[in-house]
Length: 103
Image 1 (cartoon, rainbow, N blue to C red):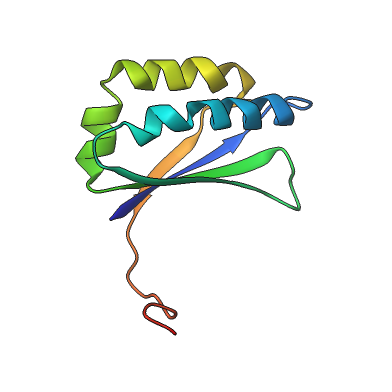
Image 2 (image 1 turned 60 degrees about the horizontal axis):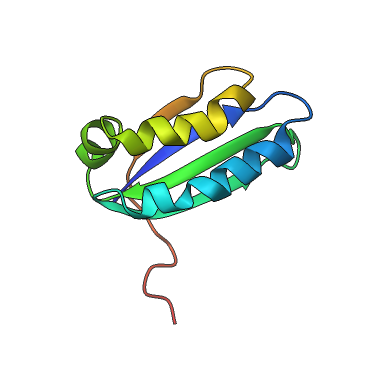
């Protein structure tokens, strides 16, 4: 699995609306081919900054499959007007997991 990590800064006062938009978008991601997980993290120090972490089977499931789907447009319609700036997106993979298989 790879992780799409989007760092998103939202406009002041739009935090609750942004979080609501992400929650409403969950079904769009659940039905996306190769999408395996999604969670939204909010910064403690900078409460207008978020990290959206989406697990995909492959990078292409995100960059080709999802981004070229009508669900991507629907996702952006739910949240894009809350962005203070364009999100910074990168794809990551786990290379060390110190707690993998721990009982």
